[in-house]
Length: 340
Image 1: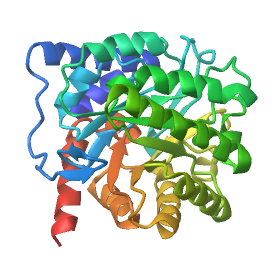
Image 2: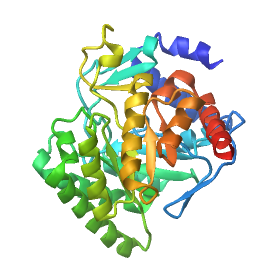
Image 3: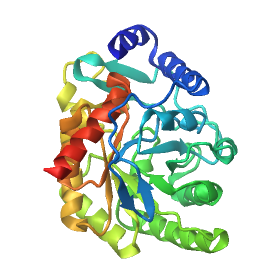
Image 4: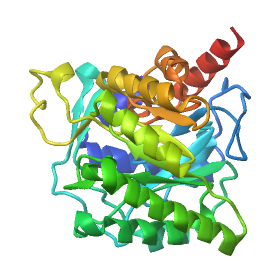
């Protein structure tokens, strides 16, 4: 059934198909038709004093402004992450900015954090009916100089803290100029130190603990991963999301869209993302949980992330190509692997 629907949606421009799909999920939810497709196991994971009903979540990027998470949460996800949201609304990069590579079950995008701004997202979060785990992913506006990026992240955490079950700091999108420089050395340490200070102050103010996670890129050398792990450990960052999209094109060389600027996601990202998870886990062990994301298209690829060291996984491009059935397939495979 989903294969037929996908074939129809893929006849439309990607962003139109995206909006129509989310509208259909909202409609199904309002008609009480958006329940899980069955087969999603009860396989709870306890992390950060949160209870995840299963380890398969929705990655940031699908619902940037928080307009659809209540409906998306009914599809069987163990958790939903919304954003990336920026302090001010912004349109993102000029279109066309999304390119499908169906031969590879992949997408290239250069969206550029298009979203309606943090005030809009907070207004939506205040009307939350979803009772699962909700992560909120924050970023900086494109117009904010990278040397002032911390100001935007402080605004972000201050605004979303009361409504988030965890906050993710996105410093790894390839589609905002200079953003990835924040993953390295003094820039990373300074940013994360400030964010930890805000986390502590906000916890006192609101009387709740909200874990702080950082999302990193797949295009890192092992030495860089070790450096990030060291900073994460020293500053007691609560978790790492690995990974964002890649700027590498080796896996899709020769494709007509291979030279398009932006981040590549989907099946070609699986190996690189899993390598980063394994390298992180070698440094962090079980002390700092990892959420694995990138290239999950079936149960086996979800299990690979867990076996590399991830405690939870997230879907995005695989969800677009395979639909809600992938949630159940991934969750069943992980549950089976854990019992083995």
